[in-house]
Image (spheres, each protein chain N blue to C red):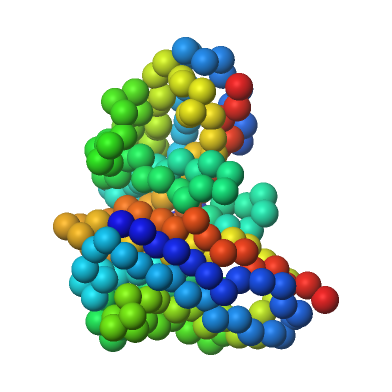
Length: 107
Length: 121
């Protein structure tokens, strides 16, 4: 199975600043990488798929990059509603789909 | 698109539950559904997938032989029968659907809010 790791585990950033979250796969997944946001009590929300394509309705302050084993989610100019848990998922080699442990983005 | 899970609860080790995922807002019979769980303090774990027709299913090794996924397309509902529950099955269980265009070789486009399963004596 492909193991996904994310770092940092917690990222403290001020509103208006940029946040950079990293995700690494234990073997290449090509561009088959998605990013999700989850807030307490809410459904997870797809942000990015195919490593760099924003999902429908996602603001352009969210951007994804990378391929193979190294991926990055960048949130420019953080808004208050962006403070949440973010996790990555590979769907290039399944079953099983595998997820990272998540990065908590906090103020 | 709306996905609404139900059926979670507190159960003793070795017990069973049937989780339901009621869907609306899309052509249910055309879409595969996955179940994903997230235990406290851990990353999400994919559990199972059922194809639109219900004819094809996949399971994570950790639940194979204990969990059974199914669906009733006449009721727009997917199910996850969870048997022989263990303490480490404690998690929020989500159902999710794929993009209509990409299908199961793509990301999970829409998720429900989840139902909590707690396994404890």
